[in-house]
Image (cartoon, rainbow, N blue to C red; front, side, top):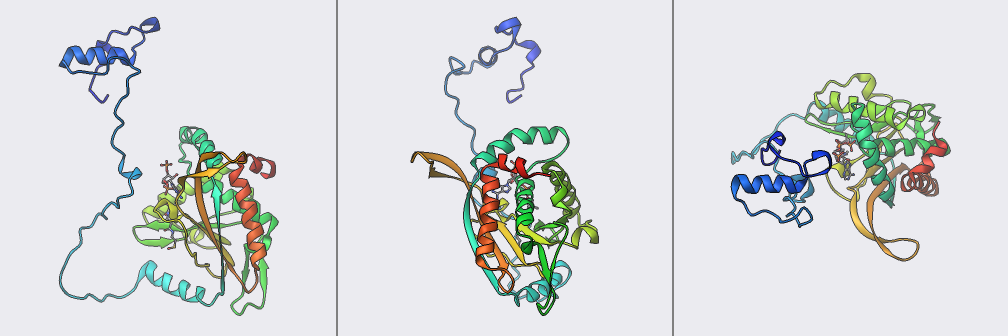
Length: 301
Ligand code: CAO
C-alpha cells in the first residue's frame, strides 16, 4: 500500500505462490531501479514517531489572536456550573493520597482484548478496567461510595456504583457517569463509556447521564501529567485521578530491571468522614486488581 503496488502484478516465491516481503522488494527494484534492502531480514529504518508518541505539544486548532486589548466576558454554561460546584467543593477538607501502579500486565491484557472489542464495535481503553477495579474496591469500602448532606450531619451509603468520568469536551469539563458498575462487565462499561464519549463530544448527554454519580474518576493522563490533586464533586466523598502511563525501569522480585508500564494515581477523600487508612486500604486493593488483572476474575459478579 505504501508503494502503491498491485499485488496481482507481483510474482510470489513463497509456499503456494505466497508473496513475500522479498518479492515486493524485487518488484520495486525492477520498477524503479531503487536500491532496496538485500534480504527481508535487513534492518528497515523505523518510520518517524507519530505525533501521539512525541512529547511536543500540538498547537490547539484555533490560532491565537493578538488584539492588544484586555477582554472581559460573562462566565456561563459549563464554566458557570463549574464555579458553583468547585466553590462548594472548597468547603470539603480534602485528604490526598498518591501511589504508583504497575500496569505491565494490564497493558498486555488490553492489547489482547482490544481487537476483540473492536470486532464487536467497541473501543476498549484502560478506563473500563479502572472503573471495574474501583467498583470491586467500593464493595469492600462502601463508605467511599457515599454522600453527605450539606452540614455533614448524615451520611448515605449509596446502593449503586454510578461512577463519574471527568470528560474533556469542546464545551468544557463534564462528568457523566456509568450507572451500576457493580453489575457491569468490563465490556458493558466500555460500551457505555463509548456511548457517553460519543454524546459528550457533541454536547448531547442527557440529564440522567450527568446526574446521580456516586464516585468520580478522572483520567487526565490521556492528555498528560503524572500527579494531580483531584477535587471532590459534592455530595460525593471521594475521587481519583490518573496520570499518564509511562514505560519506566523497575525491579522485579528477583531484583532484575524490567520495562514496567507505570501510572500514578492520586486520590482525594472527604477527611470529615473518611480517614487516611481507609483510603490507603482501598487504594491497595484497587492497585492489586490492576497489577494482577486475573484477580478481578475471582471477584467479578
Ligand atoms: N496514559 C497513557 N495513555 C492513555 C491513558 C493514560 N493515562 N489513558 C488513555 N490513554 C490512551 C488510550 O488507551 C487510548 O489509546 P489507544 O488509541 O491505543 O486505545 C488513547 O489514549 C485515547 O483514549 P481516550 O481518551 O479516547 O479514552 P479513555 O477511555 O482513556 O478516556 C476520557 C476517556 C473521557 C476520560 C478522556 O477522553 C478524557 O476526557 N480525559 C480528560 C479528563 C479530564 O479532563 N480530567 C480533568 C478533570 S478536572 O478538570
